[in-house]
Length: 68
Image (cartoon, rainbow, N blue to C red; front, side, top):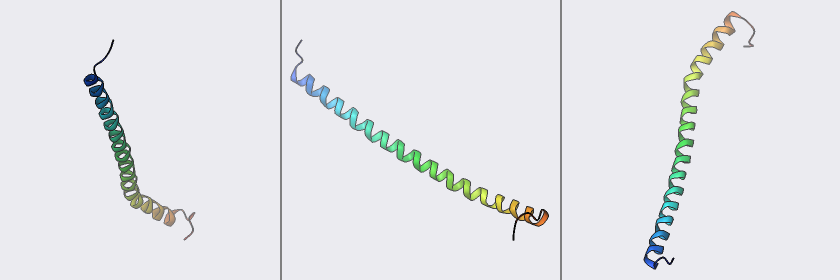
């Protein structure tokens, strides 16, 4: 069965469009995922630092195990 040139060109353009959109979408997905992970890591460190510092200061005074 022969497919007309018009149909073959339409299919070719459709496949190229799907491929390019898929690659572009995957790139955006990976970039956004990396950004969100880094953003959450920075926020978590910023929130944990005062808690850890407070805990270390309290234990330094009471236990005497940590050097000054």
